Each structure stands twice: as C-alpha cells, then as structure tokens.
Length: 115
Ligand SMILES: [Mg+2]
Image 1 (cartoon, helix red, strand yellow):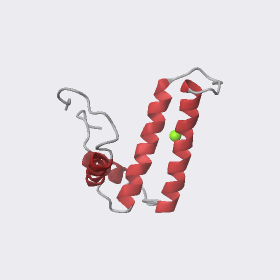
Image 2 (cartoon, helix red, strand yellow; image 1 turned 120 degrees about the horizontal axis):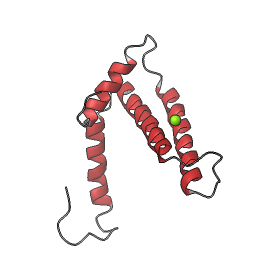
Image 3 (cartoon, rainbow, N blue to C red; image 1 turned 180 degrees about the horizontal axis):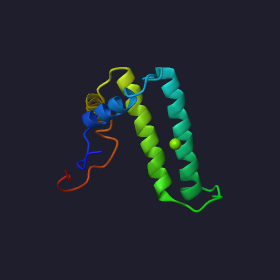
C-alpha cells in the first residue's frame, strides 16, 4: 500500500488489481449488492452496540466501525468496477445534484468555507 492518500482512481485501480489476481474475478452485480447489504448490516450492529441502545457483549471498539466502513467501501468500489463506473465522476455528479437540490434547505455558514 502506498504511503500517500489514495484518490478514488487509485482506490478503483488497487481494488481491480487485487480482484484480478484471482481466477474467479469479479462477482456479479447482484452478488455484490448482497455483500453490500451484509456489510451495511454489520456496520449497523457496530454502531448500535457503541452508540445505540443495544448493549454490547464485547468491549466497544471504534476501530470496528472503521473496519466495517472499509468493507463497505471495498464492495462499493468492486461494484463500480464491475459495471465500469468512474466513482470520481459519480461523486462529482452527486455533489452537483446536492448543490442544486439543497441550495435553500440548509443555512450556509458565515465566513469563508474551508477547503
Ligand atoms: Mg464487515
């Protein structure tokens, strides 16, 4: 793994290299959707045990939330790669959409916006 922060392109390339080392290659989009649902459920369990009303059987560990978010990100990237979707472009389009949709929904902060 490189020392520098990855771009979305870097991440998509790294996941592609990882998957392509195996004969099985990419799972089908529907299998990846099922995996994504599983991982979201695992994140929900961790959040509920640490921040929710469900008591935890094991000590709370914020690292488990990061692990589950990493699992979710991996599956999202895998799904995007398998469908030849550029996540950088997809995220840019989403932020443009939100800029328009939410322009009057929230209260802008006073002063300069941090980068
Ligand atoms: Mg998981």
